[in-house]
Image (tube, rainbow, N blue to C red; front, side, top):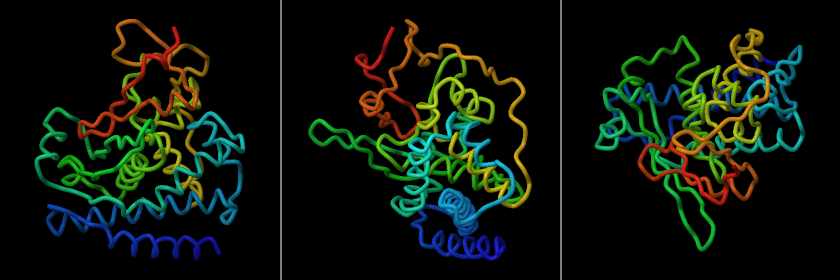
Length: 276
């Protein structure tokens, strides 16, 4: 039964992925982008099936992963996490996928370390700030080294599509003493320090999905990172001269406006939303 469900999800996701708008890509690059997106969409659909109770598997893998990457298993926060994956499911075709051009050269410099990026700009209407995704771009480091024997292609797609979802969308948070919250350790550490910000960090969604989809296939859940500090301590916004702690109330989360610099990753912050 599970094998049939997963096979159906794969076929549906692959068919959907072929409908995307690919710009400035060679045929080989376009084929790899479509394949990676298909794998990402299949995993997202699997997550949604698990959340809906349509796929059940042994053990408490989902509970472990929710606590590890989001610091919570409460129904309200579970629904908010599900909502982001639902938006990924619905919005995968809202923007072009780009391999070459000026924006690629701007973002994917030799020292950038970037694999892919999402260009999101604020869309201000009256006193409210919405978000409009302009494109998802891929750097040569991703296109030239893509390895479909690993979860990385799917991970990159889920990470980037998370940037294009809810209001405000999950970003790439920069906190001290972590730096940018990329990777297993930093994502898990963020969930310990602030479940509110874990729900606003794209890599938390990508790693959660990676491991949940792997668990559905019967591969279990890996141990948590050994050097995560599970004690509570203050965390701070990076690049602040005077250390300040971010207010994570809903009102202030909506004032965290994504910088319109083509990266779709840097978060701005309002002084009224900082507590000393």
